[in-house]
Image (cartoon, rainbow, N blue to C red; front, side, top):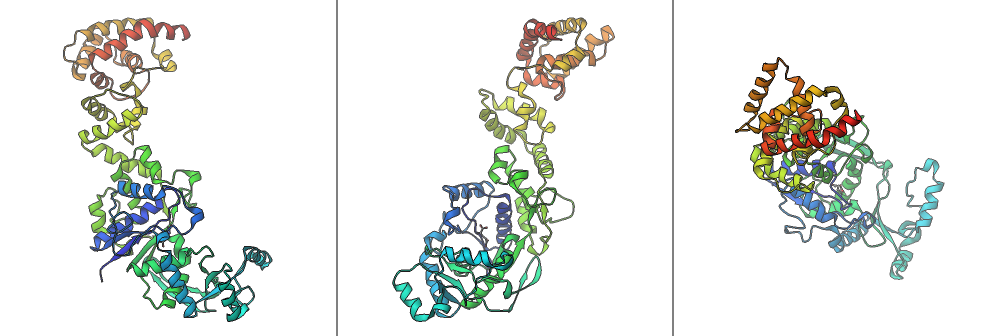
Length: 488
Ligand code: GLU
C-alpha cells in the first residue's frame, strides 16, 4: 500500500509554527516512504475564515521548501482540495449515516441548546437525545414534516452508550476512551456545512490517506472519528499525534510569550534552512546531540516511532544558536546576496555586493541573524549619528586629540589601506612614543563608529576604506569633537 499523507490546515490567518512542524513531519514521512503528500484546506468553519490566508499558507509552506503532490494549487484526482467546494459530498455522506441509523436529525434552536447547557449540572453539558427536539423525541412523521416544511436542522452522530473505543497511536501506543464521555456530535450544521469531524473523516477516506499525522490537540477527536469510520464501514488510517509545543516555562506555546506565526520569523531574518532545521527537532531528534541536519538527512532519518510523547520546548535561544551556525558556515557570496535584501529594506542604497560581502565577513560572528549586522554596526552604512558619551569621557584627553591628528596624517599616506598596514603604522607610531595600543584604539573606534564595541578596529577600517575613514576622522576632529568636549 503506498503511503498517502496530508496536511490539512484551516485558513484562519497565518501558518503557526506548530503547523509548520506538522507539515514538515508529513513531508518527511511522505518522502521517506516514496509516498504522496496532499494539501487540503479545511475551511468549513466560516466564522474563523480569514481572507487571503490560503495564499499566505501556500506561500509560507513553499518558503519552507515543502512540496505537495496534490492540493488546491496542483490538482489531483479528488477534485478541489478545498472543503468548501466539496459540500455536496459531505451532505451525501451525512444522509447515508441517517439512513443506516448512525445519524439523526435534530431541530433544537440555539436558545434551547443554551438553556439546556445552563441547566446542566456543573456545566458538563451532554446532548440528551431522548429529551431534546430531534428525530427520537419527535418521531419519524414529524421529522419528515419539519424537513419538508424547510425547518432548519442539523445531523448528529448517534454515539453508542458505554462502549470502549480502542485505537493505537504510533507515538502514544494504545488509547482507550469510553463513549459515555462523548457527546452526540453535530456532523452537518444548519447552514449545510459539515463540521470538522465529518469533513475530515470523509476526505481522509476518499483521498485514500494511509497515515494521519497531526498535533496532539486533535487526539480527543479520534474516538468520534473512529465511530464515523465504523459507521461507514471504512478502514481507520494509522495515526500519530505530535507533541504539544511549549514555552520555556512549559506552558502551552502562546502569542503572549512570543511570536507563533512562521511569517514573523521570516520577517526577523532567520534562514529558511536553519528555521526548518530547528522546527524539525521539536519533538524528535534523529541522533543524539547533533543539531545541524539538511532536509535530505531529515527525510532519510525520519521515523514516526521515534517522535516523543512529551511536549517540545520552543526555545528561541536554541533557534538563534542554530541560525548562527548556518550564518558562520554559509558561503560569503550567498550571504552577501541575501544581505543586499535586508540592507535595501532598511533604506540603505548603493552598496556593492563586494562591499556587503566584506561587511558580512567582518561581522557575522558577532550576531545570530544576518539582518542583525545592520543593528550591530549601522556605521557600516552611514556616518554615526550619535557618539557614546560615556566612552568618550573615559578615553578622551588633549593628548589623545593630538595623537588622532597625527594618525590621520599617517593614514593619508598609507597606500594600501589594509588592516595589516594600518596595524603596522599605528604600532610604529606608538612604539616611538612608548605608548600602548589601547590609548588610541578606543578613541579611533569612537571617532569612526560612534560606538564602544565592534569587530577588530583595523579590519573595520579596511572594509570602510581609506576615503571614508579619513573623511570621518576629519569630520570628527573639526566638527564633532568640539560639541563632545563642551558637554563632557
Ligand atoms: N483542520 C485541522 C487544523 O486546522 C486539521 C486537523 C487534522 O489534521 O485532522 O489543524
